Image 1: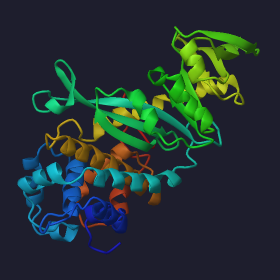
Image 2 (image 1 turned 90 degrees about the vertical axis):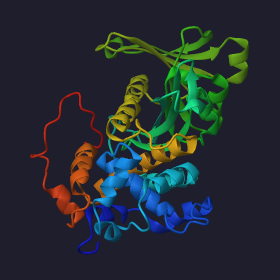
Image 3 (image 1 turned 180 degrees about the horizontal axis):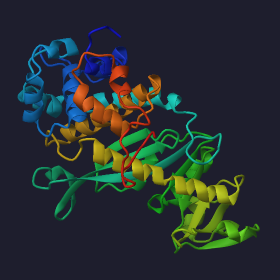
Length: 388
């Protein structure tokens, strides 16, 4: 890195410039643009994410106050809220969606050996969706219920490193089960889902794609027991059965046998029934894997707490999706920086440091070295932490 660069410029150096320009060219993002390029738009939005700007005027005021530092940080052209508003409305959000996928592709190998609580060689994914509430009066295109508007962020989370392997943002009225239609199934992997995704026809795609799934069962499905395996009741297991579906349409949609596992959690005293097409793993491991699905809920809560996707800088679907995808890009970028620089701080602590040192001229690693593990402020037990 060059001596004298700002921390923000050094952070942006981790984004592969050629890949960014490929994303821009793919959707002609800079076509007939002379003063405010897609790169300037991304820098403004990344600045807003890292410093907690609440509005376009807030972004404009914060950047203009930096004066000559803007040029040396990489900003070009005139910084104005009208320029940023127009860019968010008209530049295709898929530019930043593709950029996020590029960064995810870089980050996942860095975290491929991370422990998530169960020792397995296979890649394990958790699939879920979270709702981002919007104001119906401002976002009528996102009507969800009679008095509500919202979008859903559908996420396939790689449990090693808590990194999204696939994401999509759609109006909340579209049921999450349709995400299974767009999912590219990876042979040999394990997919963990809540019972909202229970559709036997769609689940049979995993069987055909040589992948495994673990999903909670509903109480109203009919089945015939083919075989029962012994279980150790002191571990919480209640049953381990090989079953075949009895109802006409489910049996036609999923003609293969299924494994049904009953489990009672000692801590919550709740009973669970899981369905899976994996007949090789021990039943207790299946139950433990489903418990790891909670990581996707923590991911959603962390995103909502620490990234700025509650107040939006534009009202159109394109502007909302642009802001969400740039927020995800910033999240993954910090995960890459954390691993490549060997930083031992949590992502939350990194964002707090960056919010105060973005335009200081110092090595980026020096900014993070002021706080080490022993000095890091203790957080409440309710504080969500990823990458601890």
